[in-house]
Amino acid sequence: MSTLFELVVAWGVLTAALIAVLIYRGTLTMREDDQLFLGESEAHMQREQLEIMQKVNRLGPFVKVLGTASGLMIIGIVSLAVYQAMQPQ
Image (cartoon, rainbow, N blue to C red):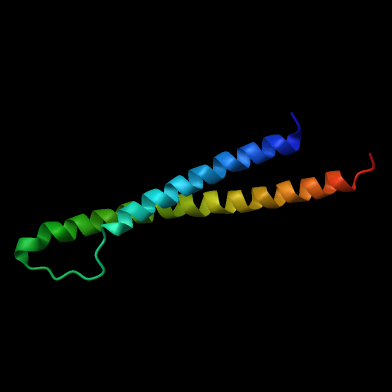
């Protein structure tokens, strides 16, 4: 197998992981309310919202790392493809 093909496969796996994390974060934030009017009887709702925000905040670094890695990898793949295309046969 060529190095380029291996890089494309690795990029696909990395990008699939990024998409999975983004979908999971999206499903968490669907349950989040923009505005909450709480009384004593709705204190459990406040705890639920705080838990959701903690989960979303924990996913932030994963999204940044996976997104950056995916972007850098695709730039590397394109660069390698251009370099290989420019080489004499």
